[in-house]
Image 1 (cartoon, rainbow, N blue to C red):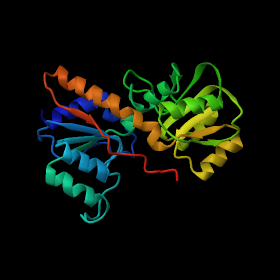
Image 2: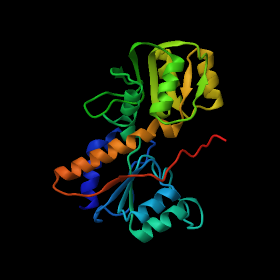
Image 3: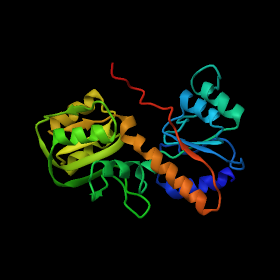
Length: 265
């Protein structure tokens, strides 16, 4: 298939018009006219993911986080982004990123996090809700109140994470939960308006934690990677299914090479 046909599929899954204004989703490397016979799905372009793509002879890597956020003033192949680009260009591997538009999409990253939390009905913390998008973040109620420590235990098992960071008291009963995949601290004002029993996200900084503590809202930092890694397999399955419907058979792999950049030591 042509890459432009795959892009059509990706933009049905995560409509580009729902990306945040500051975002840089879309085709990052390659030509829409390129032929694609194998695809790799990952959260990020890392050296390990690139090596995996080369080893598996893929023609396209679909990522969540863009390789480029800002314009490049120079491209040196011995540092940073340039070191990643060299093998991609040499091997003819294209890169497409679906970032904030996949965060908010129906059955997207945030939707998947809500399901992992067992919140069946929720509304967006910010943004519109349509048939295509759920908006940024979410707030909803569990079917019955649960102990915070039990929620933490279940999350650690389901998301396969060894530890989380908690702001606020751990001996608490929770029913109303606000959540946001990735870095959700920017939704602080929306979370405060929602008055949840608990806020779950990743990437909380020290002053973010202090703000939630001052507002009396317990906050759980499960890590950026863990909050989003669960999208890779369902995204790969949706791409594969859409390709099959068009009468093609293209392998769609889920990356096995990437890891959370943070390690507990």
